[in-house]
Image (cartoon, rainbow, N blue to C red):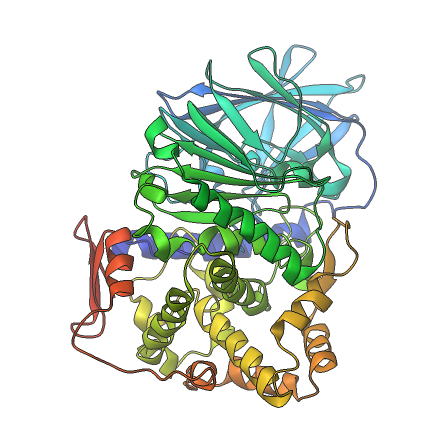
Length: 551
């Protein structure tokens, strides 16, 4: 889920100001104008038709049929997107909005406090309205936005729907229909009920489930069953620009099947009815991933299979996103849950949500054979090296970085990342969990470990899909059940203290950080895969293939 983006200082300053202003506006709007979401069913199912065939103009064309009651209606364009941890869905992408009732056009106004909210007066005698608009997709792919290309597309529903305010997203039912280019195949956690015509009709789901279930589609796709015969199937759906990129060896696919086996052993339960690992292979778009409860979006280079030796540095991506089905989607921080997608959320526990997932992503990659154990150690060593020299750690505690998505925005980043810090709850969070694991092993003489925490915390209530919420105290209580210790004091010290060494877990594992004038093979492969050159330990910056400098 992580990526360093580089833009001009001016552009980022504008984006930062806009993000903060939008956050303030969202908070004001929620408090003053918008109806509070209620846990009651909406008036009837919404019919949502999305046409994704206009590749030339990079447009999604949307028609929405919405049951309504007469009177003032507020429509919300989703803003706070789970997994992106901030108000990342851009309302500037919405265009051409028209609202019709009985064939007549209704005037609408934008809410003055919340620019994601639109208000319309429904006349007496009207029971349904038609909403037409387009989502204008960006020309460049940041790794998290929808993709509409010649060979592949990724459709994210949050940009293609206007939701009635005043209802939990889980209580609004949607019948979604997606039109794809002729001959294209798709994969998604959504299950189709009719795919014989040009329109792909999906089973009825809640708006909450719909937005959590993106669709990948393309000309070239290959599907691998990672758990044959399972009552809760897990599919590996791989899309590419050409058939050659889809060629995988039996050993490579077996490593992905081992990922499923190792996750089962670790967590001891599944919290999905089925799961789709969606992977797009394309050299034109940056690598990255985004988690969902019953699927995950993943993007990597075309050589994921053909350049297997070189791609190992990013093969923790799929384990990371798969782990999120347990950590983040099923067990979810209480302050990250919201009734709808326009209620602001907080990120105080991202060092669990993302940090521990970063830890398990690397461990599961090694246990499954996606990488070897030595590479996993190098991951942790490289992370420790980067953090131990990070100047921003001298003034900013880790807990404060959990605000980064709200302050800077996932698609913006920071200009002086090494000084300002950005998303460090991922990697420094992973080192905290390595520290906890090695402390547990040491204190119990090898009898207990973080594996026991994972099974006891994430592996409860096998088969349950609905989120089970937690807070800081529940995390520390579960740690103490496994190994008695002042975990609350330990964590608060690690999270709130500036400049503590991140090396203790690594050293307790029997390793120490050493420096040489030669770049390691792992670091070379990492730079090569990302098409960048890192001079962070000498000149203090990095340069990518476009000549952009990052600090």
